[in-house]
Length: 553
Image (cartoon, rainbow, N blue to C red; front, side, top):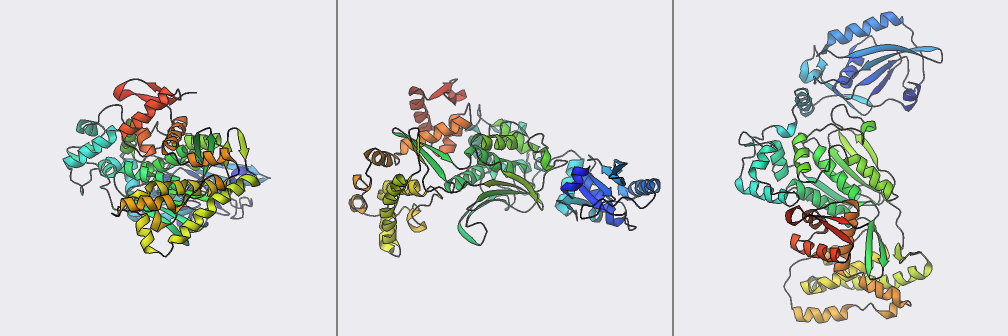
């Protein structure tokens, strides 16, 4: 108990120096504990965590507390009262056990006005959505199983969802499977189906933003994803990767990309945010990227009796139908494994363990970014981070910067450069610029980077492309490094490296899962995998639709 007192008040702990005569000042906390993870009301300790001890008769105090809890609370709350002696001072500990018959409320105030919950170390009156969620929990019903009266089933939507789910599944998903998964109930759409289709509330989306610095003062980029749930996951995931620092390792003609935060950890955090959020709350999942961290927040505090200390060891499902459906198509490996996997991947890659916290009525995961290095290139087994290499990279970077400056303010040149004929050049410039910066993967500037389908003179554009910029032997005193720098732009090598990295973290993956990760069609991905199998880098298991791929150890 002494260690808990030293840690201070929390979601499951509150101090009172004396028991207030006005019972409403502490019975609300008892109610809040019962509606959540349980908790302890400690009497005889002040707000400064100092042990004062009891001034009243212990037996009278116990009887008084017992009677008030029994008379004022509805339904009946399970509790225990004990005394503890610390430094020769007696304190009273009222322990409230987490319960199943939620919501608990003050009888005289009624359910609507007498229900309280715990947010952090404070007690708050529950709003309508929270009361509803507590009611569902008390009835052992999840919100996503309820019928959605606003969305009417559309066969075209169902087919699109079946096709999307089939890409990640061991077998073809049909409408019958949707019924078995309870996405459809009594010929009506459940909330889970509406969420999977992206037809739920307008706030059932993901908002992503890249901020300059470490605050939300200046926004550099932002996007919203509000289509199907799987597309929301993919969109948010790729948005984060686009702004993460990438370390590049060159081995011969191949390049290996490793992000500062493990891709698998980002993936798990985004999936968890979308699967376990409270969809009854009119708010969005938010992904915020700062210079020093990546924050992923989801509406709704931890569900049921879960506490932060339970993360990675047990779980309670807020949306059981969504979880079951995504497990069916292998997006979720097993219930309750997400947080443990995030921690494991970060530890394996030498990344600081992320922070998990409740911020108001939201759950937040914070990944700490590694400090940006001017150079993070490995050639063979030798890690080069010296002045010679930095000078080389600066020389590569300088003409690129000059090239960008030419376009600033010149709308005609920007229009020409947006032409599809310049796509390969834009890509190569991005690769070289990223190599020297190794920071946010910015693409020249917003005007140049966006791939508009402007129609221009292709022949003239190609001619301009050849003369626009030359990056060759003159910029590098080392022929090997120069040649390797050119090969970094090789698209096929880069994609193969991403496939190998994905398989390193995701064993027995299907073609559709890998295709989704690298952003290619299944047919093209299948061709690349066949080549990797032939090269002896990847092992193919099974045949046809059931085939999976594993990285050869």
